[in-house]
Amino acid sequence: MALISRLLPVAALLFTFSAFSAADDTAHHHHAMNMSAEQPVWQSEGVVKKITDRQITIAHQAIGALNWPPMTMAFDRPAGQETPVQPGEKVAFSFTQTDSGYQLVRITPAQ
Image (tube, rainbow, N blue to C red; front, side, top):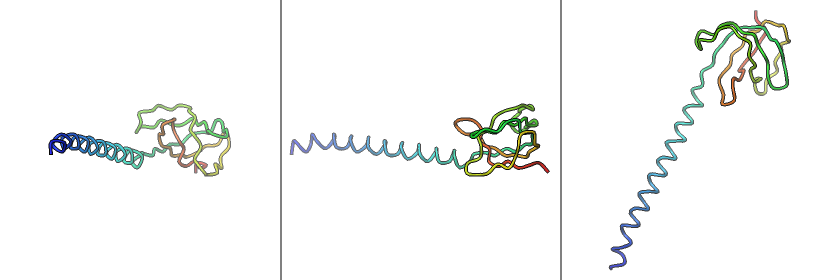
């Protein structure tokens, strides 16, 4: 009986720490899922300056939603999509922010 009296508080502590650890882990993953599901997509127009295997450099108009002035910047190419544009061509494009920079979502010749 004395052994059970000593082990019961230890077991209760271990259970409590396990429960808090599981709750923290679940909350962390839930937060991460919400972040990726709510990525904003911005749109602009510009002129293609350079195309590489990984990126398309565009001289774009001001993007008011981001408080960006007109500038030239490289965007990661859209995953799994053909990019039917050439350097010097006016384009309309949409993009999102990633951990490594900015990713084109779509790019098409401007109308």
